[in-house]
Amino acid sequence: MSKLSVLVTGGAGYIGSHAVLALLDAGWPVTVIDDLSTGFRWAVPEGVAFYQGDIADEALLSRIFAEQGTRAVMHFAGSIIVPESVSDPLKYYLNNTVNSRALIAACVAAGVPHLIFSSTAAVYGAPEAARLGETTPTVPINPYGRSKLMTEGMLADTAAAHAFNYCALRYFNVAGADPQARAGQSTAGATHLLKIAVEAALGKRDYVGVYGTDYDTPDGTGVRDYIHVADLAAAHVLALEALIADPARSLTLNCGYGRGFSVLEVLDAVDRVTNRKLDRRMEARRPGDSDALVSDNARILATLPWQPRYADLDTIVGHALAWERKLTEIRGGAEAPRTVDFATTRR
Image (spheres, rainbow, N blue to C red):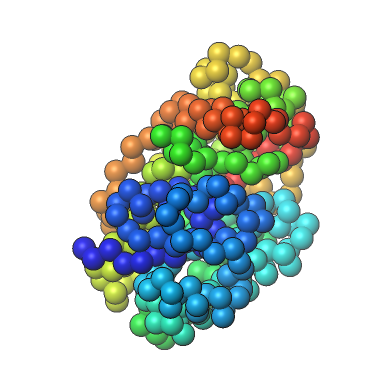
């Protein structure tokens, strides 16, 4: 298959940087745009064309497309913290919806025919089903999920009107780090549960807050389907290949393993891997969280030749821990602030 030039938005961030590595490993020409509000310039590998800027800047996007010969986009840029979306919804409708509209418009104007979209299981809201398939009703319960679902709608309408196809990948909970420790979750004050837990295991935080112990789950804490970030990145490359192979087809696919773990089970795994006991402090629920989100991943397994390689919780923890240790070296031993952030189990 011909390897098209791919622009990765948010390619200096957590998931975007892993997608960049997956594309490079597979021989695709890659360009990155990132405003570095949460990403890091050093996370972009040497030799990758980098533009610091905003995806709302359609003139900049037009220039990038022309200079780099872009024929496909992987779109990761946006805001992802569920409680913040509840307290500051307009930020999420701007960053995730309005700015995505600008990106889609720039693609149409330049004739860029393929886009992979970083969506989320939050579009399902708080469903009663034990596992969530792509046909599960989408009834988001927070602005984060609504902002992503609105973008999915824009993509569908654009594909119906133009020579353009897309794949919306609905992530469940992304965790872990590149197995070769080339990239990982690096954002200071990140709200990912596993990130917080490994920071605490290495003495960078005093404790892990567990927000909500009265959910309708076996141990009372929220249950999520954790997917290794390298497996997720591999799914993006395969999805791009599928779009190129059939330009008339667009896809919406869940990205998960089909198995859920509670907050306490994740913390137990960190205890096992580190051979130490984390200090856990039980806190009240936060707005916008649901009891359980576990994928039905039958469609992605049937549609793409995707074979997860790291579908083991302890492996995910081990890679996250290795990256956290390397990150300490990268930052010269400086520790993250000892503040307590949301121990969320969201993407």
